[in-house]
Image (cartoon, rainbow, N blue to C red; front, side):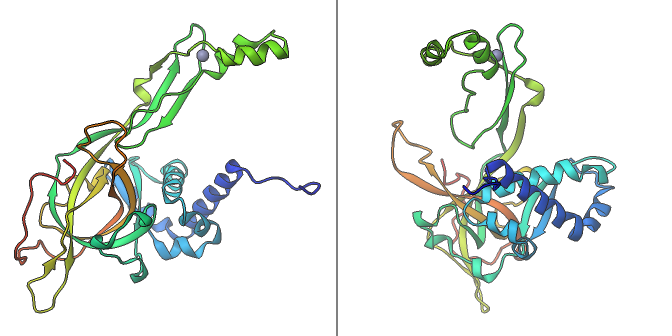
Length: 301
Ligand SMILES: [Zn+2]
């Protein structure tokens, strides 16, 4: 490293993204906040145009390989920096809109190599689960007497809840006063930390699984549908908003998950599951489909 040059770590990188996204919202979406000042919803989908994101070189650099991280960071910026514009604060959920034809794909063409990529699909909702809750953020307080360490951990959907490791404050106390060699050994035998969940800081969100099929529009009708039923997860205000029979254009990223009905722990088979980042309605409620099996049993069961 040359003299005087600072290494750009993940934190600086994240700060740069936060500033770029904050500036974009400030310059192009301020009028949306005027409308939101009287919003009475508790949760509101805030749509940002894909072209606007791509036009900013800093933001664009974050869209490719780690969309999840971008969505998390940008949504935090929306809620932290712009909440002052609203009279009745509501929680904003970042949604993507206006993806181009370049992103268009058929569900039936998805394969493992597509994971983590973002696409647009024209689909028919053929089934859905009841709304489910999901613990998105768990907050842990160290249970040791006199310790005030608290750690929030963002949890992943359909995975074992991630626990915090050893408490750094207790570790410091435990190791203080030891000689360097003793420290090295003691580090390997740290006492196990115990934690309590902080109920006020837990964040639950609503999610719902949708069963979807490709729709293939045909001017002469009836429209036809694809071969397979695919699964997507929607969250927050999208839950229960799209009944069976809805024709929707989904902007979604492809994730992999283990088989929901697996019978042994380390089953290596995976299914693809779509995480929905934005929805446009395609048409009126579909009544003009032939040979569609409406399913009350969602495909993930
Ligand atoms: Zn502690």
